[in-house]
Image (cartoon, rainbow, N blue to C red; front, side, top):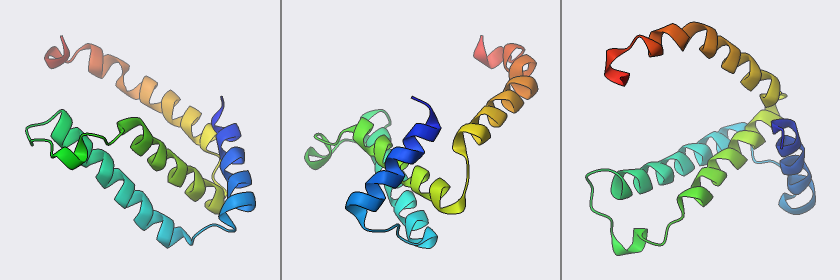
Length: 108
């Protein structure tokens, strides 16, 4: 599925279920909160922090999907074509980083 389709799907959901978009500032705060939830799972499940019983049923995929959903909302609100931006970014990263990563002895 292309990112544009995801943006359209989120926009339809907002119009039919969510009533309206929250403000960009509110969505930025929500995005920060959702990223924090992902960080908590990663730190406790894959890092050195011990996982609390209340964290064990948290689903990393669902939390990452929350991050994606709010990111798509912000893109829609600001008129950002994420597919075009992502494609540009991948091209830039590929051109800039190919030799750097292949020649990095820490990655061997």
